[in-house]
Image (cartoon, each protein chain N blue to C red):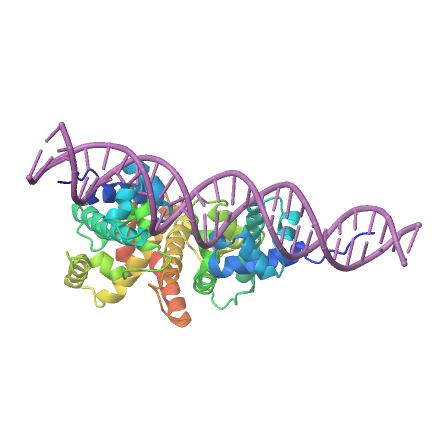
Length: 180
Length: 180
DNA sequence: CTTGTAAAATAACAAGTGTTACAGTAATGA
DNA sequence: TCATTACTGTAACACTTGTTATTTTACAAG
């Protein structure tokens, strides 16, 4: 009766997400995306009413990507916040554009806590660990640790931080005990 | 002999700098700038060969602006790095677009140290103060402090940090003693 | 095989960009 | 007063953007 669909929503979203990873959200244009997906601009606007709606889905996918990244990051340390920090800094290093989208946005779409927490309640786990380790005010400690972690991640984003994984881990653990 | 100049380089640069302050470098367009300067696009291209050269001068001016900002920031603390951190964080809070241009650039034009140091050698002063205060490794301490300071500034940029000046100062001083 | 129909490609439109060509205006020495 | 000419504004060009109109294509039901 009708022609078969050749360009699926998945294919478009995949191509868009890869573009976001490499060049950031702002550099996704309809024509470049079409070329990337191996089609004209038509299938894009058939699938998405406009580019903004597409960008929204790419953003959601970036969130999911980060949460998967964090979930899969190896847990090596007994020091609270250390693994979270390692994952966060590594993400900033390896996925600069996605890090910008999620954590250095011009206008924040989702709250920081929401992004970190996600469905796995990562932060809560860390807070409980800190409390169990005898920290009197886990909230204040978390804030300081997070400022520190976010600082290292942000600096690695701009090439102003280049410690090795090993050095970073030692620094995070040292910072934790300093703040305790 | 000839007509008097009505639109000076200063007027154009002033308008462009104000635009950068409010909307960032990326949103400066020839036509918007012309409207802001109260003229057509012609005087702009008479003065500057192209927009890129204009942007370069706006960038230089942003550097100067930050260094003036830092120089004029009140010195209240005897704790090394504390005043520098306060100024940096306040700058991020009050001049978000300029902070992005200088300290969260997509491609860094000038090194971080160069920006901080400038002609006044701010950082060197702090390092000497730390050494005089008996710090065994001022360089390592500076790195940690700077990560912390940059983290707080970056978070205030995205609205994820909202401590008062007083609280911020106490936190910086506390961090310094923790790291010592 | 024909043909209706949905999908895809092509081409176009409107808006906005940097930049340039052109024309009018006004200041100043004669 | 007037001719010169630098300076300004207007309009245009070439390009890129999102989006839409139109044409072409391929599949499946008859």
